[in-house]
Length: 590
Picture (cartoon, helix red, strand yellow):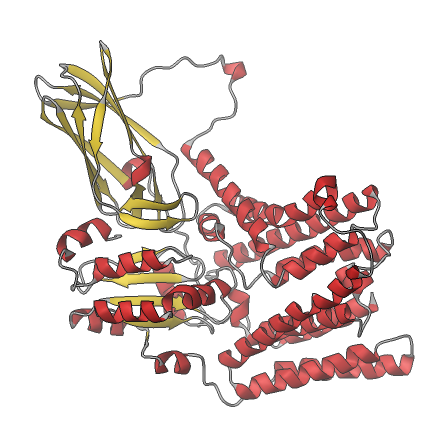
């Protein structure tokens, strides 16, 4: 427990030097949450009879909303029965959706022509559609009914046909559109939380907890897995509560905002070093912090399981897993109790794999039998933690400068010495505490140079973002692509490495004449925060594609990019596309 307290002392000391949350210059995203329109206002449908065999359905789509092409469904019936129809759909924009995968979507408007396979005088049309808002809310399928009089050519919107309903005492709780949306967001949050376990920061922690099950009884496994779950969910709820409190106080924040503070980044790096030294056997923290030892039934082991869950949430903060973006965007727009529920679902998803190993004998059977390999694996898992600490020092250096990074690395050296000195000797404990305090002090120093990260980026031909520069470039006839990114955003780095900064994509930007702009949110920036808020986001990455026409709003790309998604957006905004005028009408977002 003393070792745990020493490590937390270092982390807390570093936090004291972090930039304060109350800075009035800081306008991180959040502010006033976006207000979503009722589904009938977001997607306004009008129906027109073209002739005795054809019907036109026209959706006027509100800016910032879109419809899924594959979710269109139509049913037509008259007194004689169902009428078969064939639908002619418009061309859509290929979209990599977090829920449906690669699908086609429609912005601005969508026209669908239905051709009846037999003539009729009067018929009832049921038209089903489903869409989402770019800010994160997805609506459940929406069905509308119309009476079509082919003799007079009139169309009348009607109420849904009466359906048999169970007696009041047999009804389940009301399942409104909002309720269905909430269930879907909770499912996305749960899935996103489960995927977080695969991130390099979190995976070693989960692996060690699973390894600890190899020599445990069923009672111990179940108890410790639930304590770990409690730690994870409690931490996520506390984070959500902090976000809500700061938002209500007028601040605007998003997931990962704490990583904009160099003090927090350095403190997190020190924590990873302490964990790695424990796994390497340099210092004994396993029974209390990582809970990888044999004292699973002791008091320290029980608290260790809970705080391992807390630790897992802390180290997951640089990550935004697939499906998380939509769920977090939804949570930011809801009342506090809904937001807390979404974060709790995120925590439940993150804890679910460990619970699975705790209760599933089949899952544990996949593990080799206990043996010397467990100690070897434990020592091996220290190296991903060292690598993560190295990355965090790099982030701190990009945020501030090489002097700060050097001071932080010096603090890491003194930290390692302090942890090595820590044992039962009072004199050595005094020396160890002195080292820990020196390490915290070195970690809090700010370097004199503040070079920032944009220098390297801009040297590659990219342009620093500003609203004025975007307007000037568009006025000059240039399409613009804006990459809102940060060094601490793993998803941003993955998109840049796999898609945006590849040789063929750089050539594609040049071929389409699109200017690549970088909005760097590694450090706090009120203008970038306002840009995020403007587009209803509570975190990054954010990708915006602007056409030269200043009257056209930007295309907002998904948070996880594919090569084809970016190419489609470039073609949609580029005046070098011969079908630009027609394409942009279909692809424009708002």
